[in-house]
Each structure stands twice: as structure tokens, then as C-alpha cells.
Amino acid sequence: MIDEQTQDLVLQYLLGELDASQMESVRAQIESDAELRNFAIEMEETLGSLAYAPKPVAAPPDIPQRILRAEGRSVQPTPKTSRSKIVALNFLPWALAACLAIACVILGLDRERARDVFSKELASLRATNAETTQTLAHLQQKSTELEKQLAALKENDAEALTELAALKQKAARDEQAVAALTQKDADSQKELAALKQKNLLSEVRIATLKAQVARFQQTNAVVVWDTDQRNGVLQLDKLPPPAPGKDYQLWVIDPSKPLPVSAGVLSVPSVGLIRTSFHPTQPVQSAAAFAISVEKSGGSMKPEGQIIFIGK
Amino acid sequence: MTRLVDDPESKFEVSLISRIADGDESAFAALYQRLSSSLYGLAYRMMNDAKEAEDVLQEGFRYIWRRAGSYDPTRSTPFAWAVMIVRNKAIDRLRIRRRGERLRERVEQSVGLERDESTGEEPALRERSAIVRSALEQIPREQREALELAFFGGLTHEEIANRLTTPLGTIKARIRRGLLKLREFLQEEI
Image: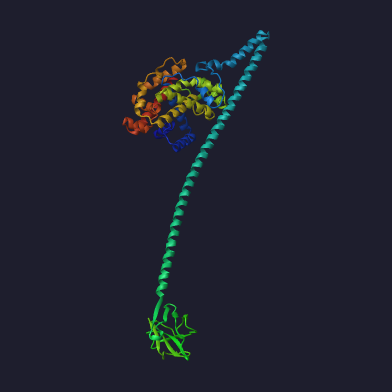
């Protein structure tokens, strides 16, 4: 028993109201359900009968010719084969057989022979008819099978397309996610670099040493001190060479220690730019200031000579 | 109603379609000769315009010429098949051109081709037409109205519901019941 909802759906299908996917779905339902198929056939027949309701109108007779010409075919004269003459056409083979039989009689053949010829002709016609029917049935069966295969292929195709669309969507989403992560990573790298730079700068201290003696007023002295590594770089410009028997010595002043810590004797070959790295001779906790003094040649354990530069 | 292609006329038309599928032009002309007046009447009823009805008929028969190989006699009779083809062509045009309701209403008021009795229609065709008209008269008016709007007007169930300001479910029921009754009457008569 087909429920009313399904019946309505089939009617909408037959009336061409459904969209392509709905049509395909109903078609598949009809194909797979014999009862539904019979219902659909009967309803289509009934709907088709409605075409008899309007009064028939004589159609332009040349439409077939127009179509055939447009299709590049030659035009044949229109045969008159109205529905009322079909009975006569169906009896054509029989009429031919009858004529043959009469001809036999006329030619003087005996009755038995005429019947024999007639029977043979009849048998031949029946055989041809049976063969045609069989071929037709075979073709119909083949056609039905092909339609089923086509429906199955269409269904598979639709499923594959749906799956492909879903995969494409997922791929697009993944791509977006990757792009977002890449951007985030780049931002993080930038941030990290900025933090590193900030950190680096926070670990470096620059101290400009001021001349304490007029003779060294022209000399520029700068110390770059790494508080993390506890070492530094001293840069001196226009420092005159020390007096004979004397050396310049660099000191790091650490408040936690009673005396300045020596950072070494400076080697000054001539007047010019000196850039030299230095390491205090003792561990320094905090470099509060830097100083340069004039010491005896080879340096001293503690500042004994004149302080010529000092700076924080 | 005779089941599908059991009657001699339908059988002959099946053979014509089979020959058309093989490119037989005379079979095509013969099928046209047999079906065109009913189909033209249908097209005219739907389009309410002789030129457009002619175009619809031509498109329908062009489809038949090209797609005769797709006809399946286990699914429908040649006539029902051809009717659905021509109706679909008419609906395509109706929907594309978005003709309003006024045009469809004018169908009933129109004069001219539909009333032409000199079409030379065959007695069998005349008889069949009379049976269908009589069967239509026997189904309740509301069902007939819904059915005609759907079939000839090319309106969807929803459009009919809007037009008649009637719930969609009622329209569905009217069309379904109308068709079932029509089938019943036709089975008795034909």
C-alpha cells in the first residue's frame, strides 16, 4: 500500500514540479519498487488521457518536414495512417496469405496443396512474429538494465561529488588554519626577536668616561659593559701615549668590594682609536663605575697613580 | 483503462517509435499524423496562442525524433509519452516567460482554433475525447479545478494553493483524489 505522501510525491514528479535531485530520487524509488512503479505508470497514463480533454486542433501539416529539414534529412511524403485504419494494417499479412491461397486455387493446385502452402506461410509469419516479440522483449530488458545501471552510476556520481565537495571544504578550512598558524608563528618570532633585542639592550650598559685632567680633555673614552657576561669593551680616541715607565690601567668599581678591581693595563702603541675588550681580574657583582689611572709600568694591584678618567 | 501497449493502436505506435529511432522518416510523419491534433490541442490549451502552440508542438516532435530511442514501452504508452513531452515543452515556455494568471484565465474565453470542428479528427479520437471530458465532469469541481490548473496551467501545487488561497495539503489531496477518480472512470469506460 502506497501512503498518500508518497503518492503526492510521485504526482509531483510526473507533473514536473520537482528539482533535478528530487526527480532523480523519486525516479530511483520508482525503479526499485514494483508497486510504486505500477502506480506511476497508471498515473502517467491518466494524466496523459487529460490531453484528450481539449478539442483536437488540426496541426500544421508541415511540421515533420520542417523538423527533418532542420535535422538535415530528406523529406518523405506523409502517409495517412490514422488510428482507425490500424485494424486494416494489422490484417495485411493475413490478406496476403489469403491472396496466395486463392492464387494457388486459381493456378489449379489441389485443395490440400493450397492449404499446405497457406499453412507454411502462416507458420512463417508466426515464427517471424515470435522472433520479433522475443527480440523486442530482449531489447526492453536490456534497456531496463541499462537504465538501472545509469541510475546507479548517477547515484555514485552524486555521492562522489558530495564527498569531493566536503573534502574541498575541509582542505580550504585546513589551508586557512595553516595560514593563521603561519601568521601567528611569524608574529611570535617578531615578538620574540623584539624581546630578545630588548633583553640584550637591558644587559648592556654604556658608560662615558670623563677626563679628570686637562691634558686628556680631547680624549673620548667609552665603556660598553655586559652585565650578564661581566666583561666589556673600552674605546678610546686621541689618547696620548703614556709617559716612559708608565702605563694606563682600567679599573672597575664594585660597591661590594673595598677596592677597585683591575681590568688590565692598556696597550697604547700610538695616538689614535683604541678598541679593546677587557675582563676584570676578580669577579664583579655590580660595575658601578669605571676609571682609568696612570700607574707604573706593568700596572698595580690597586690604584696608586693619578685618576685621569672616571664615569658611570 | 487498457494496460499500456496491449491495444493494437498503441502497439502500432510503439512500432512507429521504434522505426523513428532507426531514422525512419515515414514513421515519423505517420506518428505525427496520428498524434498531432490532440497534442496541438493540448499545446494550444496550455499556451493560449496559436503560434506558441505550434512552436511547442514542433519542439515536442523534434524531441521525439531525436529521443525516440529512449522510449520505454514498459513505462508508458506512446501517447502518454508524447503528451508528457509536449506538456513539458509548454511548461518550460510558460515558466520562462512567467506568464501571469490572466493569460491562463483567457484560455477559457478564447475563440478560434480550439473551437474549430473542422479538423477532420477521427471518430475514435472524437470518442476518446468525449469519454475523457465526461470523466472529468464526473469528478468534484474543486478536484477538477486543481487538476486542470496543474496539468494545463503548468502551476505547481504550491502555486495552486496560493492562487486558490487553500492549504497546500488540501490541494495535494484534491489533485491526488481527482486523478484516482479519473483513472477509475476511464478504466470503466475505455
